[in-house]
Amino acid sequence: MSGAIAGVFPATVKEVTIMTVWPSIAATAYGRWWGRRFANSVGLTLFGLPITLGRLMALVSIPFILPVYFHMLIPKLPFVLWGIPNPACLRYRLTNRRVIVEQAFGGGEQQSVSFDRFDTIELEVLPGQEWYPAGDLIFRNGQIETFRLSGVPHPEPFRQTCLKARNGFVGVQMARESGVAV
Image (tube, rainbow, N blue to C red):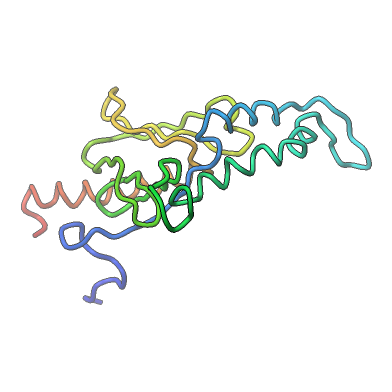
């Protein structure tokens, strides 16, 4: 079979999105504060259902959490379609060339890191993030932190996908430099 794979573009031809992740409320200090409260496991079990202080607080806090959650989803302020871009409405996008933090719905790129600017990705779960489950991904080049994504929901699959995309990109770059690939 000598044909190309459908939907796959070389990094030199076109930048293509591989995966998109929206940060959870655990990316905010407010969300982490509530997450530490929700993790409280003091309680009892009735009819096989654990009733803990943390679960009760999660129910009571719904009116306080929902406005922050929806604020992170609204692309423009004061209205959804008109106004200034909302700096809290972000998404993390992995492409075949780099990892990008951008404002959602065409708001523009905020930060990015190309695949040749990191070699490892560490997962750090801050206090309060484990309840959601979420964590921060720290991109490192040696010992130097080059980039950080805060509050990534279910961070391990995104971390593995980033590393696989980076390994493919760097492998092609090394093959080009050695003259094996064109």
